[in-house]
Length: 111
Image (cartoon, rainbow, N blue to C red):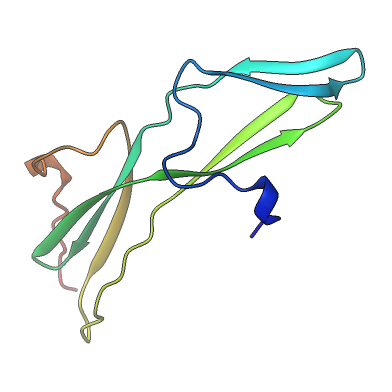
């Protein structure tokens, strides 16, 4: 967890297209970039049960002096473990769908 003064409050993250500028972020001046669209989601399948959860921006990492920026997204979910239950979590690009597409379902074969 970062310093409280450096954390983005939930819902307060920059929106796609917003300008971000770090004063003196480069040896020759400021580091500036436009915020990209960061839409991702996870599909969680627990045998026959399945869920989709959106991911949220967790941090913006800046490697000052090198002009590099990276983004970290996260998704927190809980589930009850059932003995010998097959579990699958898959990461997808884009916004979370309202309905879970049939193509997301994984066929768990018993060996």
